Image 1 (cartoon, rainbow, N blue to C red):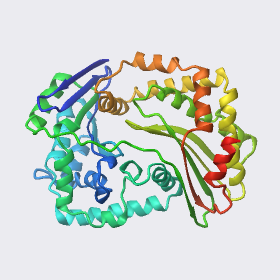
Image 2 (image 1 turned 60 degrees about the horizontal axis):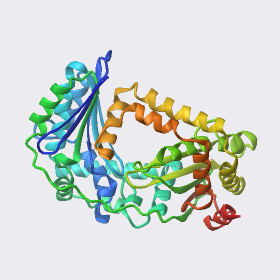
Image 3 (image 1 turned 45 degrees about the vertical axis):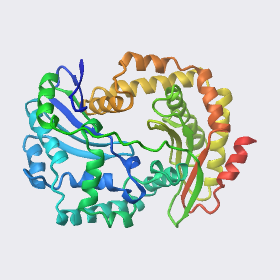
Image 4 (image 1 turned 180 degrees about the vertical axis):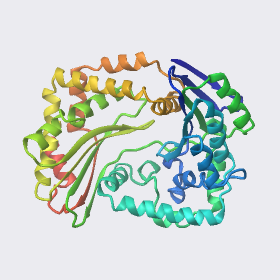
Length: 420
């Protein structure tokens, strides 16, 4: 593997990794402009802009954008998160220049035609409606809102329908003007790529961009709370979140290993006790999500209305038990799962390109893989038990419930059980 970095004179960053033996490459631009960069009035505009980038430029229509990549057998897509918006392609080695040209075109020269804005507005409103009709999707938005109320980190990425219904061309152009500068962009490429060629292409496509100040986001403040949405669904949906470390925190790997041991797979505590031993649900898992300055360990389950109270209380009990008897074997298994997931993911150029971009965004450097593995290996059983105690007894919490959840325990009741 050959890892290289470069920064253009205007601040535009480039990171590439050549992967021998591959015939394809994944190339993308990660823009530090996501949901947490929006004002309340702009909520949903980063995602709206992501959609509009594909609706035509001065050089290509929306069909020609798709055809340019698909005619050579490639793939093009994008996504918006709370911290970034990413635009990426997967193409064969000989089409790398074409792929990067298309991405540069849609980023730098979107027409934002008013008629196309109206068409895409309808598409996004349908997307919002679909999310609201998907309980195990929307419940995480509600949990996020309770955890981070009245702040950008807590708002939905898709935005509210009433906001999306009012965005216009000038709104989109204003967001581009504020957030789509060269210093906010990271070009990441992995696979069959040549670093010097990528730098040359980037200089031609992005080198004339004018630098602009980085947008200063508000620090995230995990506050916690409870939301309960009663609806006659087949299942009751339960999501419980706890304040956890961000990506830059020293104990981020402890948090991730804890979440894996608690509910990260079929051998995890929650799966074994709640599903296998008691048959209280079909789906239950725990995960540790992280951002630049905050994070949330989340437990989710879908069950029947009758079984939800028992499931919720056992979940808290299992969290408390982990603080006292998490075993070295469980921690070793979680470490192995984490390392395997990391290493297996690096076999994909798309995963590798995304990882490189995120590392540059967070630390402005690429920590050696050996350094990351060593940090994972350094997590001890004592570390995980200490973290489990914090999660069980002290960490601020948020609760979201959806479906036939009238009988579900309140957050206050769960807090009492945590303290008992």
